[in-house]
Length: 106
Image 1 (cartoon, rainbow, N blue to C red):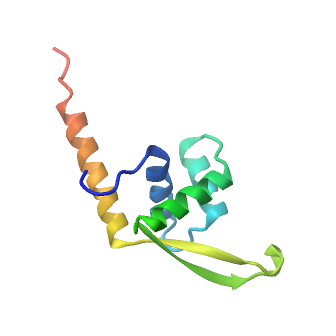
Image 2 (spheres, helix red, strand yellow):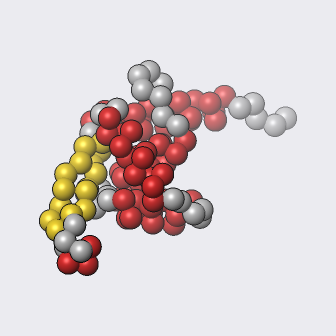
Image 3 (cartoon, helix red, strand yellow):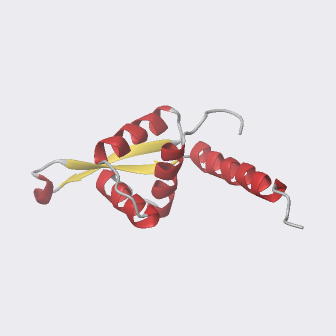
């Protein structure tokens, strides 16, 4: 893949944002990863990955409205950028090429 390197966890977070399509915020992303992968995920690690992905230009974010259930705080919603979509496409193509290169048993 050309350009910005993504670690496994960043890739998983990016995939979760894509799955949640417009409703991606920290807790929802954490829940989606836990559901999809069957493993526990630290919310702080998700927030750190989101920050890195936004710095790399793969995600953009906006603040939602404040809610009483969150003590008046706003949720930060994340969406894929075109660069993020391209990065996932490139990763999938690379992985498929590698899987397809594995010799078949005789």
